[in-house]
Image (tube, rainbow, N blue to C red; front, side, top):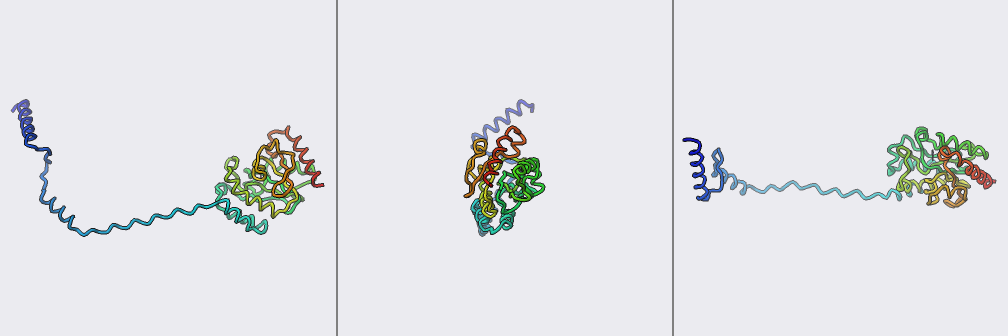
Amino acid sequence: MDSALEWHAAHAALSWQLEMGIDETLAEAPIDRFALEEAARAKAAAPVVAKAEAPAPVPPAPEVDAVAEARAMADAAGDLEALRAALAAYEHCELKKGARNLVFSDGVPGARVMIVGEAPGRDEDREGRPFVGRAGHLLDLMLATIGLSREENVYITNVLPWRPPQNRDPKPDEIAMMQPFLFRHIALAKPEVLVVVGNISCQALLGKRGITRLRGHWTEAQGLPALPMFHPAYLLRTPSAKRESWSDLLSLKARLG
Ligand code: URA
């Protein structure tokens, strides 16, 4: 048969099948429909095996109130060593994971003057002591001009005991977590006056920023006289501001008598 005839014959055969109501193409291989039916019957008769019970959903971990926990741990500390241990055991501040050392304090506990800085930088993180880098060196020089030193009569700490990555500003929740420790630190160190250096420290202790406006004006923090001052790191960048800091140092000296 030539191909045109084959096509017409096939077309006629398919049209006839459609007329007959055939709506399914047959597979190339034969299908044993008896066997299929048998299998379906066997499946229906098979006992229903109980599905393995899905494990009970794990209840979500109770939300931790990081600030409340900080407060409980800080308030339980009876002395400065216990407070340092409490901070070392506190696990809710992400900064701890990236820091090499806990930077707790330096100087003389119980000194009349307590300086509160912001956060450790690279040098402080490495040494585990506050204000040991360039800003710390300048701070020492400034204190020396009024007869103060961390070796004899000044106690120093920071709002944050761990270095923030790339020295970024601490986030509000990080400050909030560290506040109870800072407040307890002040209560245990019992200074006569606080020197609050930089905006972060003003935020943590005075609840406000704006160091240019605040500096040089005695105020109160944690029931103590507090003097906000420019941060020595700012003075390194802005030497012209040293004049104001000199005046603030004289004010501190006068307050101490
Ligand atoms: N700046 C701070 O505020 N604290 C330090 O310890 C070092 C630099």
